[in-house]
Image (cartoon, rainbow, N blue to C red; front, side):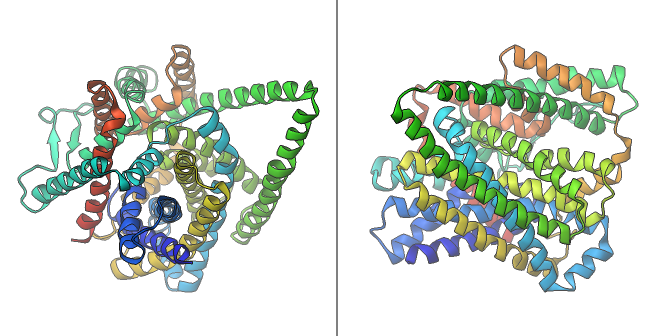
Length: 531
């Protein structure tokens, strides 16, 4: 029973932390390592001899609240910038406000977990994707009884804390570093490196490995050497932001079509193998799989779709818009989980925009509906990625699959109830757009919505062709997309971390040190936001 209360507490804690950080800063780090450390402290106090399995279960439950709060913080405050009067009226009715966010979080988060359920075997068992945050958490848990690894973890944690103290309190280390003197032109500017979060980026890049360095470098280089010249020569009437959005849309379109084709091809091949299976054992195994997995997933999907449609219909969404939202959310959540599985980052905002953007032209939407479309995609994609991080922990630790799923569903339910209350309290105290709650991600999306009529769909074609060429050369187009979407300063940090792995013979031996750095950076970001 104590695990239930610890998991509930950590879920609320993670929701509180990330609700504030994600609205106060434009960054939403994975809180999983921080939750693991908090769980270790709680177990040391209330149950010194807790098993590693218990720590993994409460970590996987609590982390759901962190990513859910991040997704809501990046998207929902957009409503304030689009329709301040309606937002103010909604804040004036706290029960309605909490109910809206609870319904949104529960339906989108449940959809995310369902997608994770059906992708888990493919991404973790068959394709063996790293899911770096899951690997990191498992490594941190595993060092609990290994003194050498525990010392390395402690060294990484303490050194990162000292770095933060010297930088923020002593002001001896600058928070930003310009690579060169300030230089810019229409399509490119010399990046200013955010040195305050660089250790976090290095840690993620190192754990992910050099496999991400090449695609991210290709993406960053292509934005300067390919996308910018095409913009200048063929689409000079479009701004850099407008063209980049269309160019990236072409890449997503190509990746989606190829992914659908390959999935259909593999499904057909699998069906052919099963069709010609001759032994009774194979037939029995196939029937068991269908009855135990397929039918259960189908039943869960029917309940999920009914609940979602009831909620969206209450908000005035047409049936056509609901079908559009659910279908594209599924397609892009699959892309999000693949990227998260490879590099440990989930570009939630970019894919939410890809779903929201066409909807502005296809459907007659209110400001609330526009925001809910973006928020639905972000929550679904984020929860799916974090769920798979947890499943990676379970896979590495041989944890009961059914038990792990139970705690992840528990984390979703607790966070869905808590997020509306926490957001209402924060907004009532500080106000959206204030110095304390700048909601920078939401402001950016609001500006995009207001300028959405200026898009040029012909600019999608170069992106589609570019993705075809890159994929033909053996470079993953989805990972290249990350380099195109992310700010150059962020890409440089991740690439640097990936290159560092080339300097070590066995990078796994350094995981505890970098895990400690990552955990300390997450904790220090909370301290920085509160002081």
